Length: 360
Image 1 (cartoon, helix red, strand yellow):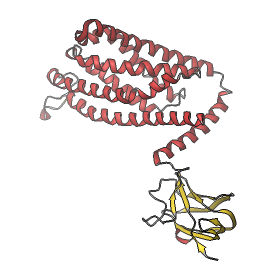
Image 2 (cartoon, one colour; image 1 turned 60 degrees about the vertical axis):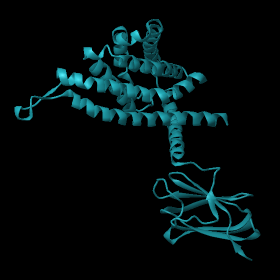
Image 3 (tube, helix red, strand yellow; image 1 turned 180 degrees about the horizontal axis):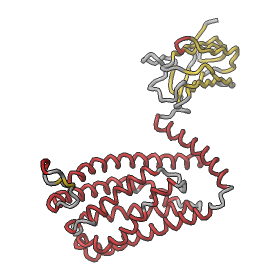
Image 4 (tube, one colour; image 1 turned 90 degrees about the vertical axis):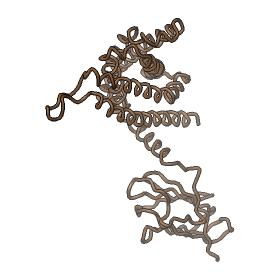
């Protein structure tokens, strides 16, 4: 009997390799791991060349565990191999040129980022089960949800007031409204941004599942702009950039906080969900750009007024201008933009992948 090579399809996750061998009516399956991480497969069955004995060998790119699981069905043989180290492989085989009989298994195929999302979804599912088991015994669950609902409600009302106030003044006064934005809305904005510090504390106390670090980057960044750049410099308070910064901030938040409010009572409004996970895509980078413009405009003012300057020994000069600190802050601002965009993009993909799985 002629020995032939079957069609083999593969996919991977961070910890596993999946192989699908296209053979039906399989008999005498023999799969073993040889030296140099080489998988040998031999079986008799019906493949592309009819009833024959089929075999193949694959030398893997990196070490795998010797325990190999396989399952034969009427149409194929499914093989699962565990990697020794949980990491993403650039390819399956040690040789760079792909064997002719090997092809991607598009039914299982995920790129690295999708595989990370799937892994996170599994971890979240396990965490959810763990949390739910604890929640049943949590006598303070109602109190926690009430607190979070009220916090998000207060923030929503605050930012809504800022947004409506600025919008009405824009329609009535036109461009003239740009120059007194700070004096008409700063008090409410101060209140909202001081309250936002709780968004760093809440995850640290386990009240919400989101990470504290992305929240800290956003809250700290906004407070530097609000309290240091705008609040401490009278010359900055009449500049049009204040209008654009405040308007972009409030536009994002009037969709974010209602979404969290509804989540506290296990309710979802699909349009609001879409807006919450979509509107930040253009607005968040625009907000950071507006903040950067505000920082750049404040640099000569800090140089002139010497406000917040760092005293130096006489041999090094009188003082170090605070503008140098702000120039360094600009670098971290755009680094924070990248971190938060990556975090929000992952949240968005995870959210819609979860919804897609529920639909199917």
